[in-house]
Length: 401
Image (cartoon, rainbow, N blue to C red; front, side, top):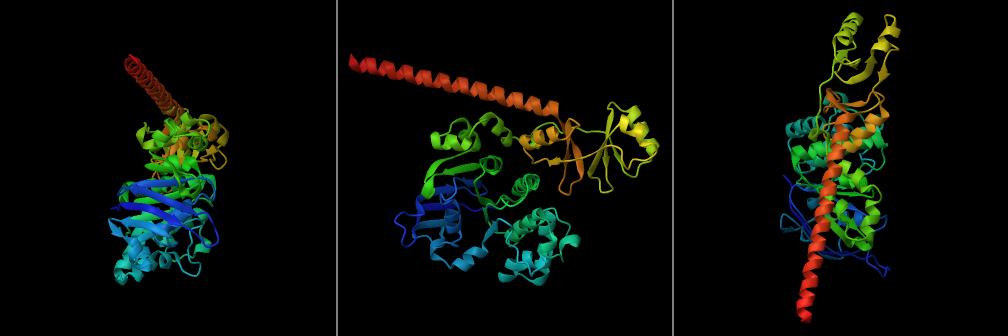
């Protein structure tokens, strides 16, 4: 479980600089909450994050984790209790994946058996096969795999707090989406307190229970839920971060698991051609989803593809370009549907196994429901403003009388 974090009048000043890098920041973060710091480059968000585990020592102020003043304890011991994940994973290149993950548990004195079990558990938790990845070195991993191992290492000693400094900033957009989904899934299971730094407002909306929009020197422009910031930005600075298309950005607030995941007829790459023909002829769709030998989406097969196959499926069908998990946002799902020509996207589990599909009709119905809810909220807000204005006018008239 997570721990509460309280920042009290936290400041950081560097010698020779007349202005503080971070100036008098106060904030309370609840146990098990994901809070995202978002703001322009150089505003002090990473500095604020690093003061929580004292990688940067505060010049003044207090940091409390579960009511313990961590500015008064040994910083090395503190860092062993606070997970830390950074951009490009920060893995030690001369250590295997297992050795990287085992680092902190060994430092805090866990037994060899417990460390070994924990490494396997953490690899499985982040969706990497322990048998396949245990002995690999970081250079033999993709960028996304490295980031998964970095998260596993940060969580290995079961810290209540996880600090993440733009951890997904150096990977391609598709990998980044999947890593974000993985973090959401992990948080559902682990309930850590996560403080996450990004300059990407869409990422903040997708991941944060609450978002702290920071001005220069980490002054808090607004600290609220994603819904509240999207619908009622505090000022022009926050509106600039929200940007155009606030209604579309709200697609990042709803998950695939919250809408209808439907079944869809599937076949395996090992099925005989005649079986596949029979499934297509006998089913309600003119299309099938072919799964590979590990049950993962591989190809969309249409009747016409099979007619042209002439006894071989090697060149038939359309490869599945993208999939989403249950923790993906509707924005991710809509993007995947638009990229794929099938009009639907396959939903997969932790190891990429097929679960179901979400189609365009389901997504558009959800969008219309969201826009209608926004419209009703705006009408209510306008009604409240008019009522408040009416009461003020009455009070002013009575005061004049």
